[in-house]
Image (cartoon, rainbow, N blue to C red; front, side, top):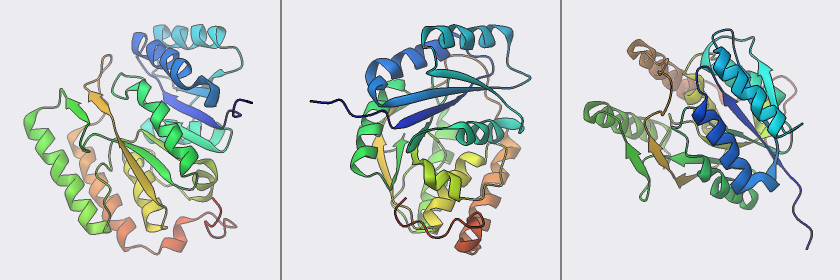
Length: 251
């Protein structure tokens, strides 16, 4: 039997991560390598020398399959957008290099993407069977309330809007006019597709607090999430598409 052709790219920002970056890349190739075209590690001017060296090491270990992409747009959202612009194949996986994204979850995510190629397939920390560890109790409660609030506002069964470990049809990513460059891009990248009628499938995952580095998310940034969520809910969905994108049938 002929093996299926690789169909997905992976986008992974990296700033200070070394061990967790290497472990993530090694794991995704071990559990889903036959489905992966390339892994794009996005780096910026703040990326440490050790992290850059880890990226170079991975490029040598997986020649032509790991590509280090210099970031031009600012912040986390800018890094993700740079990676999405470079991605190849029919689908693209967004994940993180800090240990919070369980790399072994990529296998069931990609399997579901093959079954539902027009949908976004997202890892959720809130589904039954998920593990959500290392988050302070107060922040955990606020996170749960946030998810419930926006699920009600958008009339959806989606349980996790803000994790961002997802598989997207690449044509969908290219069709949408993105605006955010900060952390709120993670939220924008699920609420805009929801407003456009894109189906979202969720699978449980293991989430544990980052193994390396420090989060760049600051408390005041949460206000941006609310702004993006309300503005997108009230906005005209047809204005979320790039000129010439047409409709989303067949994506």
